[in-house]
Length: 151
Image 1 (cartoon, rainbow, N blue to C red):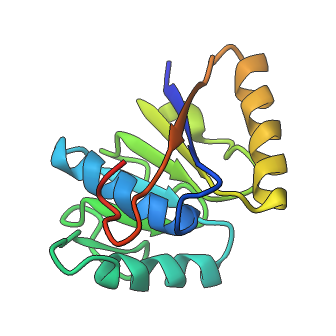
Image 2 (image 1 turned 120 degrees about the vertical axis):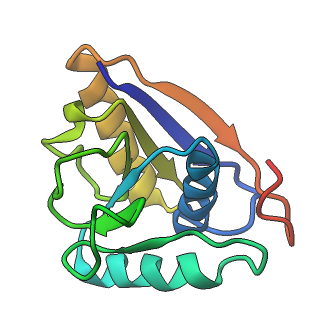
């Protein structure tokens, strides 16, 4: 049964859910876990791909887009449809709906910012997971200006 965690940026926290995703990926990789980031579309996937290279000078996160990198060698993959299916422990969902393949992961992370549409979709996903028998946890997050690794 996957562990479901919602991470919600506090109203006075700088950044958005994409910066929060970078931080979640960095923390997850510190535990030597493999990550699949599920994006709603190619534009979001490419944005996150660029951001993971530039979000913080001291950080290096080996990652790539599904289909453009060797998924066996790349511990962080960004994709649109849940592939590849092997050896990935953590799913970070950036899509508005819960992905139909979420239950194959040990952990699902749901980053949420202050955008009203993002928050409304997150509430729906929270209810969905709960109603499916996967009780989600909620974690308020405050990123510190100029220091995205403090929270």
